[in-house]
Each structure stands twice: as structure tokens, then as C-alpha cells.
Image (tube, rainbow, N blue to C red; front, top):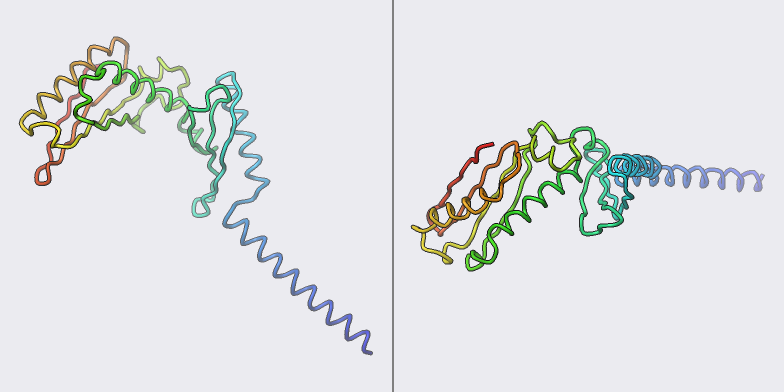
Length: 210
């Protein structure tokens, strides 16, 4: 009788531990995602980019958004570790994140070349954005992507670096320098400046013709 009681007790404990283990595994999957699904998405993503660009890519970091139930991957071409971008398998249906990175990088380099060191005294910050309503978000060819899509280039700097009344003049000089470099087809580009002097926000923008 005692042996049967022990067996029953062990069975109850084992069942209880199994339930706890099952709960823990399920909780882990809910927070961190199903590792098998993550592996499948990673493999599919690498295949997609490698076939599209004809070179090897490497995933350096994987994360999971439990609210969106979605894996995201940080990756780069193996031959160019500096060109790191983040994307998801779902995003590849509507945007080529690597193509976007290349286009934004190209325009950033163009601006830096156009301005040189002449405006370093402003200690300006510059950001390039690709508009998400552009028609060529899946385009991998750089020239075609630039010709199809719309971009914004934002500038900002500390108002102490220049007289507030000079902001527009300096900005228009910058725009002119950039426009001279736009010798290729581009879907659209807006150049903006925003400088806050503590009281007023100095804002201006120029829409360059296609």
C-alpha cells in the first residue's frame, strides 16, 4: 500500500512538474518567439536577399516583438559589414530595406560631397529619409529606385552657430549646392531646415523639380 502511495505521489509530482515545464516553455515562446519559426524566417530572408543581389548576406542579431508576433533581423552583406540594416520577412513584401539603405547612403554621400567643409562651422545634423508612399520601394537597382521614389533631406543646427536672420540665406546656399549635384533622375526631393533659438522655430523647405 505504501509503495502504491509513493508511486501515486511521484506521478502527481511528475505531472505537476510537466505542467510547470509546459507553461514555462509556452511563456518563453510567447515572449521570444518559436525558435523553429525564427530559423525558417531567417533562412527565407537570407535566400531572398542573396538571390536578389547576387551576394552573401549575414544575420548578426535576431529579436522578437511579442506584441506583433514578428521576428526582426539585423543583417548586412558579408562583403560590407558597415551596410547594416534591420528588416522582417513581412517587410520584404512592401519594402527592400537594403535598397532603401543604399539610396539613403548615396544621397547622404552626395550632400557631403556637395557641401564639403564649407558649412562645418554650423556643426549641422543631416538626415535623409525615403518616403514610405513612394512607388518603387521594392526596387533593388539604385538608379531606378532613385528615379521612382521621393526623399526628404533634413538639416538642423544650433542657432548660436549663425545669426537667425542668416538662416534662410545659408539654407538656400546649401540647397543650391545640392541641386547642382542632382544630375540624375529622382522621383522627388524635399530639402528642409529647422533651427530653434529657444523661442522661435525657424523652418524652411524647398521642393526641387523632378
